[in-house]
Amino acid sequence: MAVLTVLEFPDSKLRNVAKKVSAVDAKVKSIVDDMFETMYEAHGVGLAAIQVDIQLQIIVIDVSEEKDQKLCFINPEITSEFGTEESDEGCLSVPGIFEPVRRAEKIIVTALNREGDTFITEAEGLLAVCIQHEMDHLKGKLFVDYLSPLKRQRIKKKMLKLHKRDA
Image (cartoon, rainbow, N blue to C red):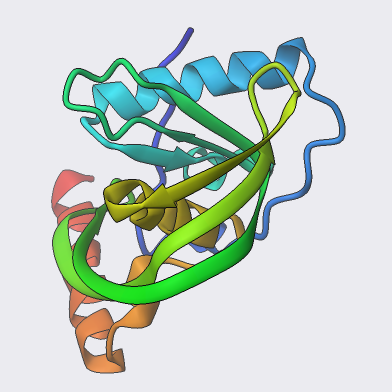
């Protein structure tokens, strides 16, 4: 397993649209394992393959306190949404920034797991928010896209300043 580099906003690669996984093979399983290691190392609760410059529809999530409830969603699709709620979101690709975003309160998702088996899950609360957030990444969308253009521009300037300082 390996810790991968997480792309940071405004990197244009974060705007790529992920491709469907054609087969869950040893390579895909290895990517999933590396993504979990990367997510845990960065103290995140979710990670999409696009964020580590892998153009595939793969998401890993663990919203548990103990970090022992790994969830893998390959080729995820939301089949139903219920209600709306607003909560603060952050992102490993936009470190240190938290802003309120409105999303579906409850969702039903169909996906493949790490073994390539189809499953359906119902999610609400933090898990539902996390799934929707990570699925946005697969479409080249970031949580900052839900913010006003002014707020998004301020965050972009802040991130560019941080990148210059770290270079």
